Length: 340
Image (cartoon, rainbow, N blue to C red; front, side, top):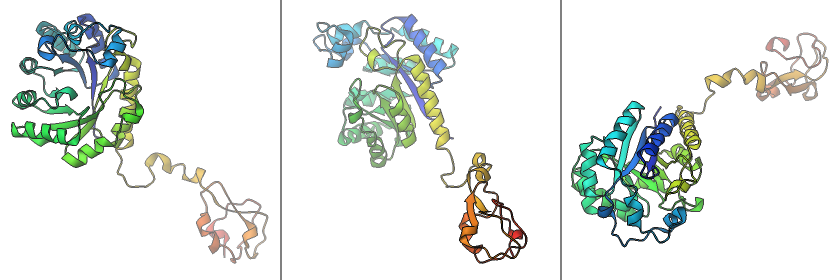
């Protein structure tokens, strides 16, 4: 059975508080995900001080006058924070991951020994950034929110030209709206990416609820990424489009169930668990009335009812016109030895 890589995106939902970050790790570990992912950035190397917040950030923080720089500055994690969180993840038996948003942060994460790089949607057109990540020669997961296929191809070309083998790439379909309206999910685009570029694919989800990522796994996603929080009512830009801990656990359980459901042979045949129900659920040919020895069977003499442990109704025509070997009561389960 193939196991989907599940990334619980804590992002900046720690609100700049290391203790909240640890509580997020606790929740992710309890839910059974593979990675808990944060965001690594130096605000002044990510945005200018004049950069405005996105509409969803204004709506979710309620602070229209605050710049994106001011918001992000409060959400930075220091190098010391990273060491502490990595150690805490190890103690909870869950893998640490973070997305770098600037070149120095790429170097920091690499020095910390992360085993793969996650490229966020906003960096898919950032050639120096892509080249920097490719230089580390580690597996790469690339999100594609806001991108078209030409931009995805350009990003793949930059990465492969810099020495990354295509087999080390996994590309996530994504929509960069928080939350994503269902009519904009376009989940089948994930398969278009797979067929067009010949890569493993997954889905980074920003919808409300858990049904879309579960559906993505049914369609063949090998990676699922989903934002989560301790409480959607907390202050911050991403809480409202995130799952709460119980929902994260439900999503993981749903994905693991789907993995089991699609892990069969693909050949339509009775399963071991249902074989015992054949005789109970199916029907057999029975007598519809009491009949005497030597009677010539007519259609009116027969009825098809449960159990299904006798002669199949598919063979009923072979019984008509035959004679009985002995007397049979009403609703008798006809056996081959009853027929001459």
